[in-house]
Image (cartoon, rainbow, N blue to C red):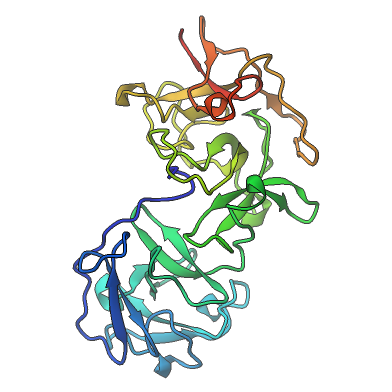
Length: 330
């Protein structure tokens, strides 16, 4: 599983069952066993269950206000739709949510309970997917913005109304409505436009090479996800400088990527992106390249550096010519 697109199935234990009202519970872990896995509430009144009014929502700490998102999240018409309603409750911690998770929604003034889920305990359909949340959790979340299947079409998707070529990045355990289409790009600096989907001002993006089939050590652990491409992602608020140690592909400044698959931890640092072989990046049909882009080649910025197959792009396709690489000292 890659650090971008998937996360390990964490075993979650010790969830509070005190105060559950009118709901059945089941337990599971990632391999289908019992006792060590998450606990989920199934039935009327549960966090995440259908509802028409707050009184329909009974799971969790009764001293915290129950809420029913009848049509959209937070009942805000500008936010995602909640088909058949979604039971929630105001919360200060997970203890207020029964089997749910106390979640901080973007731009919300309060925290709210969301239904937990995993690969075994899936979410109700249609309209919801089991979305990754943090390093260990997943929640049942409206999937209106999950617009692609990461296992289909070799990982390609149509991005935006103009249908530029995109790549499907997994954001949930589900295959259908389990991915979000990101714009494909050329490696380099300023090769991605701002992310207009995120409102105004649109946040800056950077181009990174992603292989959805690999885990954080470069092992093939997720072969059904097809994406192997250069993809635009939002830049982190405080990107790491060249040579800084890193633990995630996208922690580095624009034009750099974490050498995540290096054998030794001290070698996992931000390195300049480059293009192996003749250094010429292919102009794919439908590829968007913004004005002012500085496209990477096989030339490296450091004295004596060469373009290496550190990202395993060449190894995966069986030929290194014109595949993504990182600049390393020979």
